[in-house]
Image 1 (tube, rainbow, N blue to C red):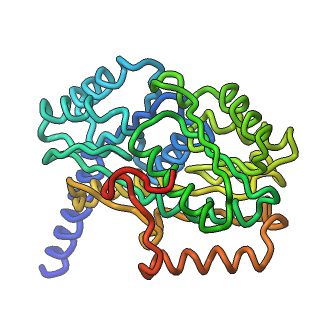
Image 2 (cartoon, one colour; image 1 turned 45 degrees about the horizontal axis):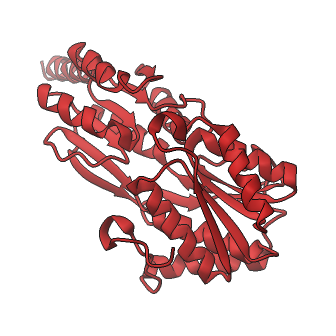
Length: 332
């Protein structure tokens, strides 16, 4: 009798677990540039792939190609019972805010956005700290002590990147930091590698010999220009060292993949929480990339110096200005 009871209870647990697994219907909506942009969106895609490999659960995916599709896609997925629904980029902010209010039982996760709602999780990163590290490294590597920054467009997240990079570059000995934006709207900021390449070449003509592009898919153009001109580029979001081996000095890695896989996994496990989730160096959300593609460019001394700067950021000895909380960048 006891054995029979144990078997029934075990079966019930198995059925409950299977039901819980079947209930989750995750969806992923990628921003402009697509899931193979080799940058921000592709990092999210890697998070989707990890979740699928770990759980066997399929994820419905959609890549927007026009501004109007943000709200349309969110509402369509929510109506179809998908939850959680994850999106990449602050550009989804207003659409998430509106659709989340219409579907209060649906879980939404937005990376880089700020949406204060009871069913929205918004993931933010300490981009200013990671950018400080690669800015310091860029200035230390630079022969001219002139370095460049290329952002997608003027927006709070990109301004965090820019300010952190300028601070780090100045701390590393840079005398000049040139800065340009690829576009003025979401449509022309993130998928325009030709424009990013032109901007990089312009900065090189002014004496810069290292350029950091925080511009999503546009950044590939800056990395290509760096290779063509015999200069150095710095990748962003994903580890882009492999795109132009030997000319990509490093990449400021922003672990969007971890944010996405965690959002889906915690929803599956019942531990998903709304509100802000901060991912920084300490939480494994921000790092700089060193691998076989760039190790010849980073001396032991340069690595040690950069690691020492990172340790001082973690300890609080170095306080990197955050434009989100501290206002206008003081070193631009």
